Structures are given as structure tokens and as C-alpha cells.
Image 1 (tube, rainbow over the protein chains, first blue to last red):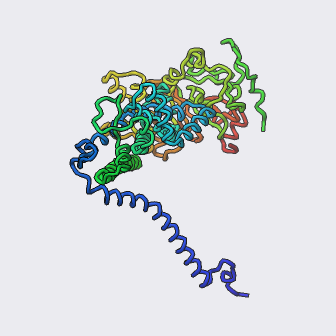
Image 2: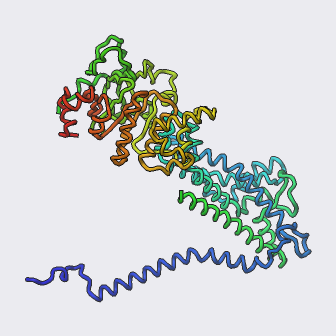
Image 3: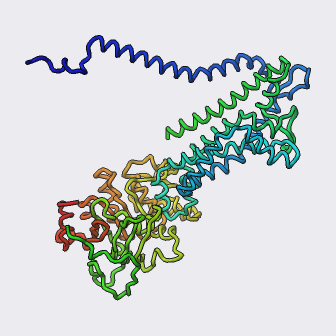
Length: 293
Length: 284
């Protein structure tokens, strides 16, 4: 019996089987490819419509002028753009220290049991609907002081940032190899200095990346600002008074009955989207730079 | 396998008077010899698992002491106990006494940071800080311990790098990142970093196991010069290295010190049959 053993094997490919296998392979590849396109498509749709509807209304006035009173054409969103940047700065002032220090606690100090509860709380907080943050801060800072204010808006956004910043900080600190901590401790360096100067510095780009992602996340939030920053049509000269923000202005203009305001809402949405894209690009650049080192 | 239970004393801290006899044969000091570590009946537990069983050993100053033994015999644990690095592992407990030049390093009010400044450490895998330059790596221990004087820093920088036999290779590239050096250079950088804080003792945990033979030879040569100024304790898996580079050798097995003697005697005519079996490669 000298029949070739390989051909009688159940795994031997016949021509028909081989063809069917190729068809299946091509079919599955196409399905996966479609899914990937489906992920990308909404982003391109968003950018396409924003450019189509908003780009024509973007001009110098939009970036430099205040909104015009109802009924007058023209005007811009300068106060809302500055307001959004102001609110983000205040949010960072609240969210970054608490978030980063909380992340350091989780990564370096906390016991297993306590950490599990803190992480759980942070994850629940991440899922709290943003309008609820607005309502809570309304009760804490708007009702007692009897006025909507930039402070209240900044605090609402800052509180939203805390769990995000805390978890990303923890994640990047845990990635710093234990051997660096040991080497530093073996030099007789105090533990807090080891953490601040060796561990956090080693992971600094990751920490900054986490902060930028959190800022991008809250930059477009509207709901928490409705009951806190409120919005206005003028320059904010006092942080204890209402302040405008791009999402608020977009919301106000989009639900108005005027065509001119609708066009400005599109332009505002385009600017807001560009700011958030810019933050994300910055994150990209930072992490590429980190990987190249 | 002979049991070693006769060397395992009770877990309680035992105060021995200076005149007390040694339960384990240590090399008889010939004349008044400097002792760096005077360790008596030292035991250590990780949780409920006992890693060291009543180790009694006197490690001489300004000599190289090699610690050998199979994996898991407690030699790294022992080394880390010498500068309290084992305390980074939660749930450790210890008994017995461990004196460094006559001072109990586990005494009340003794800070681990102070102990570690006196007892430096070099690790198995070289670990220069990735965000720091060569210069900053060497000086980080001084800077973070409060030394600001630029002339002192400059002097200590050159001194430490020369001691680590690295100065000639890096003197023109001091501002390059520490991790840009080769593996052997990185390990010598770590030695320079440890020496910069001017410790009395240098602990080395298998410092050559990740290096090629040439880099290993360099480090062994360096160890020979270090013994003039420092007490060196080196854990090694490499028997030839222990034989070449050390004055004394301690053999650990299953958490106990089996034998401690002059290196030449340990490798040619050990007293304990287990030592003989291990150094001749018949087990472990």
C-alpha cells in the first residue's frame, strides 16, 4: 500500500473546499471592514455637516463680536469662546489637583480593600448623567449665593473631571516599573519625594494625556452648565456672575426661530468641535512622543 | 537530605550577651577585625511563610562577601533585610537582631531612609531613571537628600563615576539620558548612583546576571577596587563569580545559613557536606 497518506487525511484540501474557504474568508473580511467604516462614518458625517453648514458663517466678526440683540443681524460668539476657555481653566483648577492626587493615592498608598471601593465610586461617578452634576452644583453653589456664576459652572465641570483624571493617573502610575521605586528608595530618598520626582515624572506625559482627555470630555458639556453658568450675551467681568459658553450659546441659538442665529449655531458647533479635535490631536502627539522615547 | 532543624531557634527575639557563643560556625576573627553586620538569630516571615530561619553571621567590613545558594533559599530576602528593603513587601515580620557597626538598624526610632543611605543597593536589572540624564542619575540621591552646593555635587559626580569605572566613558556625554548607555554601562551607572550618597555598605543582588561576559568582567574588577573603601555583599548564582570576586562566602539553603567561611576554603574544602555538594554542582 503506497497510497500517499497525506491525501487521505481529513484535513487535505480539495479544490471545492479550498474555494469555499476563500469565499468565507473574503466575506468575513468584508464584514469586518464594513464595521470599521461604520465606526469612522459618524465622525466624518459630523465634520462634513458642521463644515457645510457652519464654515460659511465663520468670519472675523464671529470670533471678535458679542451677540447682537434679538432682531439685528450679525454679531459673534467671542464671549462664549472666551467663556468656554475660562470654564475649562476653572474646571482644571478643581479637577486636576484632586484627580491627580487621588490617582497617586490609589497607585501608591491605598490598601487593596479601600482601593476597590474608591475605584468603584469613581466608576459610578463616571456614569452619573451630566445634568445631575449640574443640579447638585446648583444646590451647592447657586442657591446659597443666590446667583448663577462662572464659579458654579467651573466647579460642575471640575467635579466631572475628577474621576476621569483619577483613574487615568492611577493607570499610568501603576505602569511605572517597581524597580524605579526600589532604586530610589534604596538611595535613602523619602517616599513622597520618590513618588513626586521619580514616579510621577516618569509617567508625566501619561498624566498630562489623561488631563487633556478629561478636558476634551467636559469641554462640550451643556447640561451641567444650564443650572450653573447659565450663559449671557455680554463679556463676563466677574466670575461670580453668569458666564457664556459655546455649548450654551449653541443651544440657545439652535432653538431660536431666527435663520441668522441658526447659522451662527452651526458655526459655534464647528468651533467647539475644532477645539475638542485639537485637544485630541494634542493627546495623540503626546502619546506618540511618549512611545518614541 | 540532612535536616537543618538544629539551626532553627525559636521565633522570639533572643538577647545574647556579647560573650555568648555562636550557634553557627562563623569564621573566627583573627585578631581585632572590623565587623560591618553583626547578625544574630535573625528570622523573617512573609505572612505565615518563614523565609529566613535564625541566621547568625558576622559580615566583615571592607571585604567582599558572596552569598550563594539555590533559587528560593532566602539569599535575596537576606540581602534586602540588610537595608530594610524587604519592608516594601507588605506583611513581613522579623525576629532577632541585626547590627550595622554596632547599631541596631531595626531599633526604635531608626528611619529606613537613614539605614538605606548607609547601606546602598544595586539590583539585578540595571534601572537608571529614564527621565534623568547620566549626571542627574548619579546625583539624584544627593539632591533629593538636600545637597545643593554645586561644587560638592560636581566633585561627588566625578568621584562616583570614577569609582564605578565609568568616568572616562561618559565624561563628555553627561547630559545624555542614562538609558542611552549600554547594558553594562547602565549597571555601572547604577553603581555610581548608589556610591554617590557615600554609603558604608554596598549590596548587590545578582548584578551581572543580565550582562555579557565582558561587562561582567568589568563589574567584577570594579568590585575588587570597591572593597578598599566599602563593605560589599553580593548575591550571585554564578559560582565562578563568587570564587573569583569574594573574600568570604556564605551558603544559604532553605532559609538557613549552612556555612560561612573564607571563599577559598568554601570552594576547596568546605566543612559541610551540603556545601560541598552545592559548590561542586551536584545539586541546586
